[in-house]
Image (cartoon, rainbow, N blue to C red; front, top):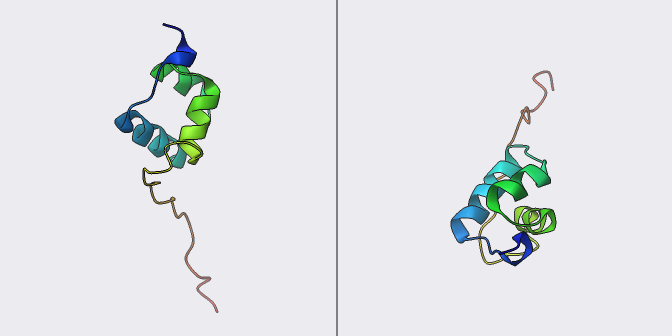
Length: 69
C-alpha cells in the first residue's frame, strides 16, 4: 500500500495536532512516522482536514502584561 492511500485515525490526527502546537514543523518526519504524505500531515495539523475534531489550545508563552504599567 502506498503512503498516499493510507488514512490517519482520529487518535493520530490528535497526536499530530499536539505535535504541531508544541512546535513540531518537520512534516516529512511526521509523515514518515504515520505513513502518509507531507501534505496530508500538514492539512491535518492545521485543521484543513478533520475539521470535526477539536484543535488543541495554543501554547501561551510570556503573555503576561508588562509589570510596570
